Image (cartoon, rainbow, N blue to C red; front, side, top):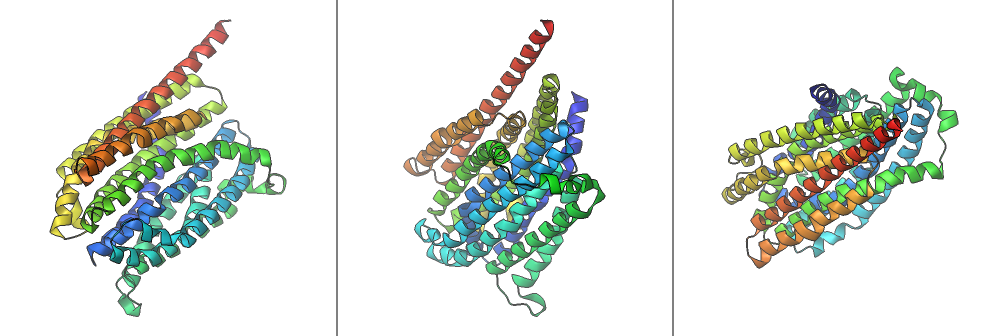
Length: 450
């Protein structure tokens, strides 16, 4: 068990660092924009909440690439790996363009969400730039998923880390107007994000096309880089449910943020601080979930269900330990963390309270991510999608709405609803994974006994 946990952590570490670097870009933007005013921070929060659902749908589609590549790699089939790379990239590129166009041309929806008018005015142009930046970001994620599926995780990690100082410098120049650059404030953060995402995408593409590590997959491109309907169906079989799963969770948080925004800019800014902090810790869980999913998918390629069970159980225990650590950290630092985002007294007070609730759901948030990832690894995606929908949208979000507005608990009520949804999702998904693996182990043992 310890050995399997160690191997998963070894694979997960570069993925986690890369994920943290990506979410750090949002945190950096929020902190640097929040230093100007809390309404600029609220505008950034509004855009992030509004575009979060379509963005994570795109992320879910890229996950199909790592799943199919890891399965083909488990079978030691380099030509099939190359085939999934090309078809997966084309599918994700189409997805990225569609999402980007939807966000850019649908930006006026921000006028109809009951938000502070000044916040909406600041948010509209920021939405356009963030919508365009979806394209290089999802293309980068697609290539990252390809490399991760082969268990080559360091390159994307290095590029993600390199993106941080680039983003900070561009923010410093364009948000504040240093060194003679125009002072664009929130719009400057949008330009910095677009430029940074484009740079790291082109850099990763160059590495995959030219580096000797990936040469055998590029060498067979003349035979394997052909669009195939059957391959797209296989990718969509994983990608669509994965997108829905992640989209329903992110959607619950996004809708919660929009509803909280109707209370006022202070509540929305506080919500964004607490949510950004929780999102940062969640990236570790996502990296761990992806590593567990890749290892499970690789074992599935060999039909080794006993191995799948041990990998899964050790990953769940690791997530549990990590969740407890995060819960304690949030509770202890709840009055310290918000000061890095804003200095408004009312915002700081509310953010500190919401961080207590964020501490409560750290364990269930971590373990539900692992459960979903392990189930994707064994290609079980349809039923988990339904279970996640029930946890968040049938129970969690409606309860949160009732508590927030009918029982007048405000932002606290919405966060209680999120806690309920996350806890149910965790129980549903982990129970299903353990049940399915045990069933398949028993079936294999019965077959061997026969």
